[in-house]
Image 1 (cartoon, rainbow, N blue to C red):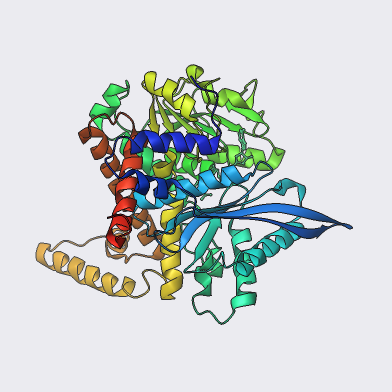
Image 2 (image 1 turned 135 degrees about the vertical axis):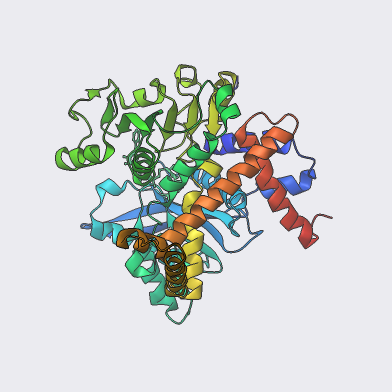
Length: 471
Ligand code: NAD
């Protein structure tokens, strides 16, 4: 086996493996694989009495559809290669879930924990100003969103900075997604990636024959789950899988360590415990594990790495005991590790599908911003009236009275959150069906990642071919 590839090399190897299973022209594949624009910047920010020179990036991987789209990461580990890998994944991700964007990603090389909110605000505003200056942001150009180390707060600062420079643009609110609901955001965006991860696991586990092949019965209910990372994605994946799917979370890891509890961890209680004690360790009834890394090799049905890339590598892949790995994070399994895991018959739900719920709901937010209209505002009352008439007619025809509580439930019109969840669920279900079908039907496709890649490549190449660039 070759040396451990870095993140970009892993993405490249996975791309080549899938591309080799298609009959698309070589030149076209090379164009799809390449990063179109890489903007590397350095800017000064005054921190305390001194100036710090901040290193940052924005990479637009593919312009086959515009705007480009992808999150902004704040981490000390940010490199140009990492941002390029993440931007490429965004292109394939958008194609897989039929979101009409090209892929992009941003990175600022800082550890957010080491700055005050006021300093982070300064850095975010300056980064945004640099993007505006080089035409790397705008509702029709490139639309950032949250990623590791950023959230709705940073997105609100980005919008405000954009408006300062481009206040006359009527669609300015669509320059960034993942904003707070009160600042032109959308209900359900914060939970979207985790909710999407849950739907992806639910779909993968709904096929009895696929589950039999890996030694599991179908369905999430009662299955054991281990989660690495309690940030945005890990948090919502865990709470939704536990409350809506009935999963049993037996192991959780965070920066400070990992805990294990055979009969299941009440995730809400763990969040409260961490808030109070600043640590997940010493959670009542649970055992502290030796190292936070132990979460990756614990015996469980579903392992959810929701922190960073490169967590499962050739050094620990043999010790993985999970039957399913749901890649909530981007690139948590290296290409070397994947070879080992596939031989061990582990099912890997690939990142570019598994965590696509975030960009799906970002797309809904962008549409809301461009239409200047909240989803559900026009039809909610109309539908409510119709359902009411229908229930009244049923009461008349049957001579029976439906109770007030049940009547309210039956006649309720859809709110924004209902429509967002419905659109997200539909997207994740449809995308899984497409990927699974490719895996079942196409010769030599043995894993879900290759099938997902092939699905993306077919869609992206049809865009290029229809432009007549590659006859
Ligand atoms: P986040 O910053 O909200 O949370 C990450 C958490 O992981 C933090 O709490 C951190 O302390 C923890 N962590 C870091 N290293 C760890 C380790 N070695 N062991 C245990 N815990 C560790 O970030 P996030 O937004 O949840 O993103 C997590 C992953 O999901 C990233 O790979 C990101 O690219 C991907 N992702 C995020 C979104 C989104 O909408 N936020 C969308 C798609 C993909």
